[in-house]
Length: 384
Image: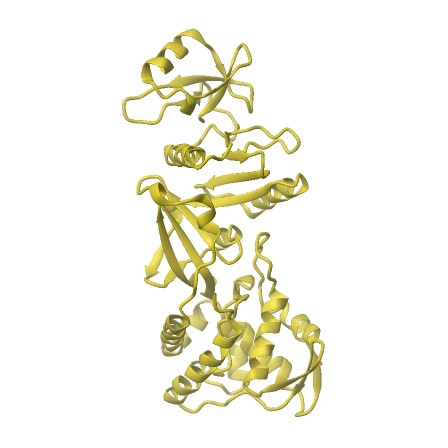
């Protein structure tokens, strides 16, 4: 921790006392107390590490197990915001919600949380709801040590990381490299792998507002990468479906569909796809086979019917800072089916069946069909 209170009640921020001899003198003169748990802390001044306060006795205080990586990053972000003219407070106590955000800007009521360790979904939602009730905006920045890139345009996206997404973007900061990495858009292919562009911003030359400016998406790169991923899934479909989607595999066999020849209309990238954790190949196939399939040509159905039928086959993500939902992703998929002539839009969230999904005979046919499908799906994305 970087902030403590003296026995006289004076708040001490070690970043405001940068001279080593000044801190040494302060340590000799004062006793320090943790402002969060009211227990004694000592001022540690090493040769290499960031000066900081540490609890004399281990307890359950939120600062007891703070890592050096987190502390260094928090200090760098604090000084970075100060240099840009922001009035920022370090580890400010918010009594109304009993929280100490890493950084707080009173003027805009904005908390900046540098999240380097894993927390549960329940802990995350509790913090989120408490901030929202007090009208506090939160910017979550993940530790750069959690950034994992599989290739130029594919990143690891765990359920934990997805929770922190802000308007289809994730922010990382690495205090060792002194860089921000912004990953956007976030278009998941599977529960843990997502297509994304990674934009790197050096700390020295970046502005806080710059992180939130829109970034353009290369649609042709998305098309190429998505096609390659689908080809790999078709090639290894039996192993993939046996490993974690046995019920889905049975569904395909029930409809006499080999695993490698699932409908080309399934597995389509969508703007709101982040909202659904279940792979698009799976939940979209359920729509094609279980919802639209049994209908006669010319029969009507609604978005709500489709969404209700899907609930037992798909899992939605917890995304409090993203203005999309699983239902919106389903609606986008129906818009795609309209664009390829499989269904017709006949009213507000009302549709009519025109034809069945495509029955594939060969893998080569699948590649040709899917290329056309993905090109059509790109029309759903707003170009910035």
